[in-house]
Length: 70
Image 1 (cartoon, rainbow, N blue to C red):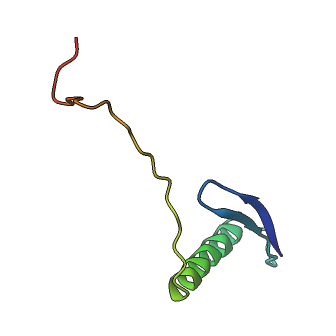
Image 2: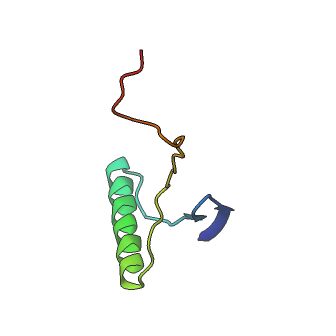
């Protein structure tokens, strides 16, 4: 099941739910890991980039990072 969840700052968030026939925590972890890698590969094959947060610092004109402020 694919559910759209939210609009993030630089993303469209979704939730993917699927069933595996196991109650083993290890098998659940393996299935989750495999699914994430398949999604990553699908993104790559379709030129879909995962955005990363970007922060911009606006420093005052003349700001000297090398100066020691005491």
